[in-house]
Amino acid sequence: MKAAMKALPLIALLAVALPPDAGAESPEEKGLAIAQEMDRRDRGWGDQRAKLAMILRNRQGQESRRAIRVSTLEVEGDGDRSLTVFDSPRDVKGSAFLSITHATKPDDQWLYLPALKRVKRISSANKSGPFMGSEFAYEDLTSQEVEKYRYKWLRDEALDGRKTMVVERYPEYEHSGYTRQIAWIDGEMWQVVRIEFHDRKDALLKTLTMKDYRQYAGRYWRPGLIHMVNHQNGKSTELRWSDYRFGTGLGERDFDRNALKRAR
Image (cartoon, one colour):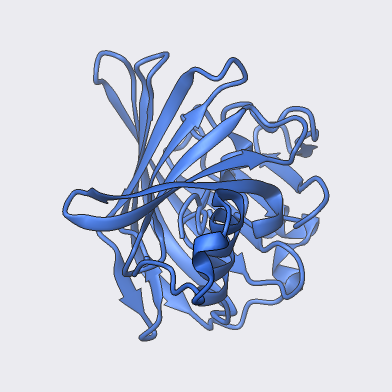
């Protein structure tokens, strides 16, 4: 869930400053340029920690809640690493999820379930499955590296009073659960504020909204609320973020497989 998945986050905009010959730029080139600028503006934070409340709602609106801690490490030249630890309720307490994102090859992901006392590797062909009963898939929880997609700029439009750029992106990952995603990118923050996910049949599957952004360290924007709605089963998952901290001294040792069992 790095940077709120940059977020799995799906989600890190002024109109793009284009050169004088920008009129010759294709929609694909413009879409890639937007993705690259988003990435450039969100570099250099090093590591971060945050807390979040996960609220699961079924079709009838009944809720269950979980308390979670997330640590993230920025990795130069590759995807980022994140460790997610569940603190409550009792049935998931101590569960931990480690995600090591890669820019151009399948991500490495492991899940530790204390009841089983073992670490389970998430196979590369199963990353479209639901994460811990939520409406987030495992593939939603990786850092959104530029190389993971092909892009196409669709249009500029206003969304909730904000100027946004609408970009379609196509996963390069062969086992992705999505044929395409449509992302609305804020023109001031250079962060994603909405994504529509289309399933393998190209039907609308889920919509993600990211709200209540705040700026940290005078540069980095992070959301306070992430909401995923599944249009096909009527369920939703809400993530309420708090207590963002940057530069806490995390290193690679905090994100190896042994860290899953050390997490408490």
